[in-house]
Every structure is written in C-alpha cells, then in structure tokens.
Length: 256
Ligand SMILES: [Zn+2]
Ligand SMILES: [Zn+2]
Image (cartoon, rainbow, N blue to C red; front, side):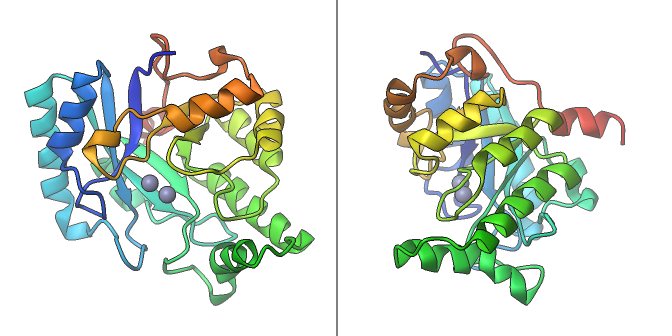
C-alpha cells in the first residue's frame, strides 16, 4: 500500500510544530503528490486558526507549492459546533480554502450551551467508562449527519474519536453526499467492528496522518495495522496506490 497524498496535517497556525514548508518538504520526500494544511477551525478555544492569519497561511502554502512542486492545499479542520451541524468554516470564507475537513472536538465555542453534550458530554462518559445513553448516540450521530448534509465537507476526521456515534448511519450519509471518511493514523477512533460496518455501506475512505510534527506526515502505521485485522477492500481507499480523490468542496465552489 503506497500513499499518494496526506490531507490532514497541522502547523503552528494552530498547534502543530512543523511549518507549512516543512510538512510539504516531508510529503515531497515520501513521494506524495499533495499535502493538506488543515489547522483547527476558528471556534477552537485553545488552538484556533486566526482569521487575521489567513493571508499568511495562503502565502505560505503557495510558496511551499512552488518550492516543492507538489500540490499544497489550504484547508481547515473545522469544528462541528452543535447538533445542527453548524461548522466554523462558513460560506463567507470558502474563497480562501481548497479543502474542507470537519470533526468533533471538545474545547470549542459551541453553537448553543446544550451542544456541549456532543463534546464534553461524550468526553466525560468515555473517561468514566460509562455506557453512552441512547440519546447522546442519537444526538452525536445527528450532528455528524447534519454537518455532512448542510456543508460541502470533503472529509470527516477521526469519526467517533472520544464520542459515541452510530458510525454506519453517518457513513451512509457520507456515501450519498460524496464525503470521505478518514482513517486517522494518529488517533484510535472506529473500533474494528465499527470500521467493518462502515465499509459495508460502500462509503469511500482516505488515510490521513493528522500530523502535528513534520516527521509524522504520511504516517499510515496505525491504519495499516487495523486494516490487517479488518480486511476491508483497499480499492475503497482513494489516496493510495496511484488513486487521488475527487473533492466535493472544490466541485461545490465551481458552482458558487
Ligand atoms: Zn481533530
Ligand atoms: Zn487534526
């Protein structure tokens, strides 16, 4: 299995250590065709990409692209801010970005006070090894599905990480909308059983490193270990073995 691109990496624009150029150079060394620079969305309370830094981020990506000759995508790992599916990458900023990732994180500005349950509520239950209630699974699943239905999300990051979700239901929505499910090599997220059920929906996958340091760009080890156990068809993964994905956000922007 050979990776063709890594679409989820962080830089000091949020809390990564490798610069845009360092991540791109590492990707080039590995023979990747493209790297996504995807720092945390504006509503992250500790490590947000700042709106005022957008011009510098875009400039860094374009310079890295020129220096390495690989495609360097200006992306965001946006936060799903509530059950409504509201993301912090919104239409007014679409013009600045090439790549739209979305995921659930804890320390963010939620849309409503009650939306803390999909972040903090889930996190607390995991920490205390409590069985998730049917309502929290339902609301978390609804948050993911609404995010995919209401926004042109390219990739759902680390589905189910620190939260309880009906992953197969989310996958059906992703399959129908053309959103990729990420196999994240940094974080344990889907269980083997969940991954098997998700794959059975026919959804398409991408493998990402979620690198916070340049040396981890292109890392696939954790995912390869899980794939060896679960055995899903590699043809369902669109950033390996010469394949490259077709992204929904870029298509959406052509018709704006
Ligand atoms: Zn994340
Ligand atoms: Zn990330």
